[in-house]
Image (cartoon, rainbow, N blue to C red; front, side, top):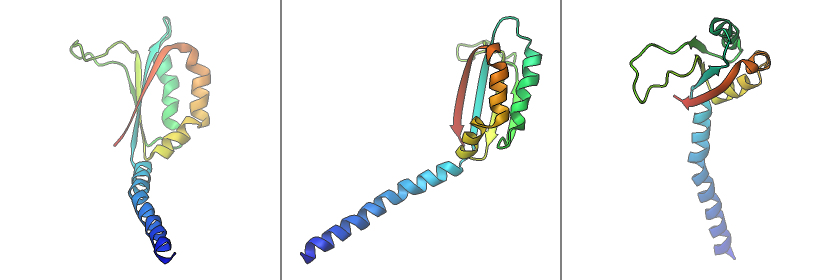
Length: 129
């Protein structure tokens, strides 16, 4: 009985030790900075400059650290370069949690409500740094 109890205690300690690195990685990932890139393909007839003016409001959301917006650069046409979008914005967040909060920020939701009819397609690329 004593050896079984000791064995179970050893398993419990080993299990806790095994989950420690996973928990630590999850904590570190939640503190990593996140870059959120959004590419818009606008409907025909939508004024790009008016759309940019509207989209600049996204940079005023509470958890946005940095915000950049622009149009495709006139770089060399190559198979790997996509110039087909009309507007792109890049938002920097201090953490994944900040980006999650941005998703429900009233300014973000108002932008979507007011402008979603203006784009034919939108693509989002997120990555941790």
